[in-house]
Length: 90
Image 1 (cartoon, rainbow, N blue to C red):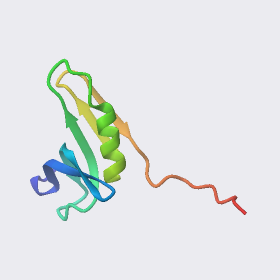
Image 2 (image 1 turned 45 degrees about the vertical axis):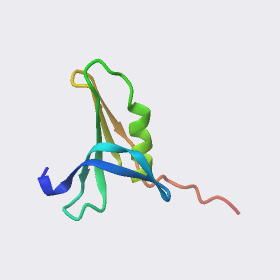
Image 3 (image 1 turned 180 degrees about the vertical axis):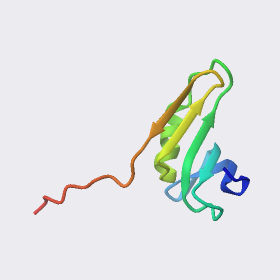
Image 4 (image 1 turned 30 degrees about the horizontal axis):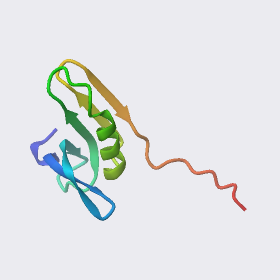
């Protein structure tokens, strides 16, 4: 990825509030940095926490892919968006 498409320690917005935590690395679809493509959460070796934190970042920033790693273990999450809606309501 191009350096212009990356942001480090990006504050995460939950509605009108800005979370006090930040996503470690955000990869955007282009240099305008409007649409996140991948959010990456990194932890110290042997730590296992942070996956739920990553999921909340994916929801808040509407990113389809999340990556969590502690250096030896890694998890890749896929969050398809937008959801498919059933239009059978009367």
